Image (tube, rainbow over all chains, first blue to last red):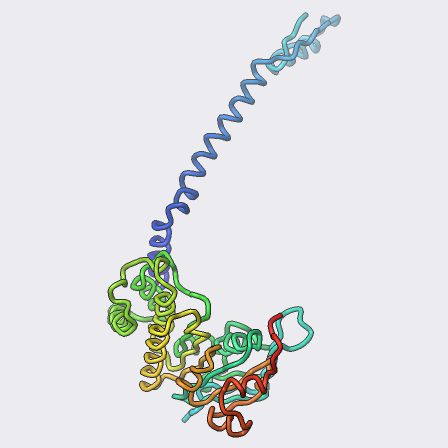
Amino acid sequence: MYKLRATIIKDLQVLTRDKIGLIFMFVMPIVLAIVITSTQNSTFELVNKNKVPVLLCNKDNGESSKQLVNAIEKVGMFEVKK
Amino acid sequence: MISSAVSIQNLVFKYPGQADACLEIPGLEVEAGERFGLFGPNGAGKTTLMNCMTGLLNYHQGNIKLFGHEVKTNRKTIKKFFGFVPQDFSFYGELSPRENLAFFGAWSGMKKQEIKKKSDELFEILGLADVQNKQVQKFSGGMKRRVNLAIGVIHTPRILFLDEPTVGVDVHTRQAIISYLKDLNKNGTTLIYTSHQLSEAEELCDRIALIDKGKILAHDSLHQLLSDHREEGLEGLFISLTGKTYRDS
C-alpha cells in the first residue's frame, strides 16, 4: 500500500510538471472531439440538403406498391417525382 | 558464517538470438567488505556481468550467489541488501532529489522518517543540500551523477554495484564520489565497481578483474597483477592483456 501511494504521488508530480504532456492529455482530446463532430455534422448536412431526384412511375394500384412508394419517400434521401 | 559477498560459478550468459555466449566465467569470488573493480574495454561484458549479478539479466548456466542467496531464485531477498548505481541516469528528471529519494526509498521498503533522515544525510555528504528541492533535469552532469548515487545507497545496502559512476564528471565530483564510496566501504558495504578510469583502480579497489570478450583474463590485487605480468602501470597491463584493437566496432 505504501509503495502504491508513493507511485501515485510520484506520477502526479511528474504529470503536473510536464506542461506539454498535460496539453496532450486534456486539451488534445477536446480539440479532436470538436474537429471530428464539426466534420461529421457538415457531412450530414451535405447529405440531407442534396436529395437525389427519382422519377417514380407506379402503374400498379395495389396495396403493396403504395407501401413501396411510401417507404421510398420516407428514406429522405430521394426527391420523388411522380 | 558467509564471507563471500558474491560467488560466481560456471556462469554462461548469451543474449537471445546469439549463437555464442557473450559471458563465460568459470569462477569468481568477492569477499564481504571488499572493494572490487571490473575493468575492461568497451563491449567487454562488464555491464552484462553486473546486470547478471543484480538479476536484471537471466543467465543460462551456472550460478551467482549474493551473500549465499542464488540471484535467479531469490530476487525478493537479494533486492533488500544490494544497491545498484547504473551507468545511465535512473531518476525522474521532473522531480527534485528529495522527491526522487522519497519514491525510491519507499520502493526499498523504508519508512517516511527513515527516508527523510537518510536523505538529509546524503544531501549533506554529496553537496546537494542547496538544490534538494529543484528539478533534477536542470542539474549539471556531476550533480545528476550524485543524485544517481544517492538513489543507489538510500536503503544502506550491504553490497553496492556501481557501473561507471564517475563517467563524464569533473575532478571535484569524481573525488567526492570516490571519497564517499571509501567511507561507505569503511562502514561495511562491499563495492563492485566498473570504470574506464584506470587510475580509479589504484585509488579505490582492493582487487581488480580485467575482463575482455566476456572472459576474465586476470583477477588479483593490482600490485600482484603488475608483478605477475611485469608491467609498471595498469595501462600497460591493460593493453598487454586486451590488445590494441577496438572491441565495440
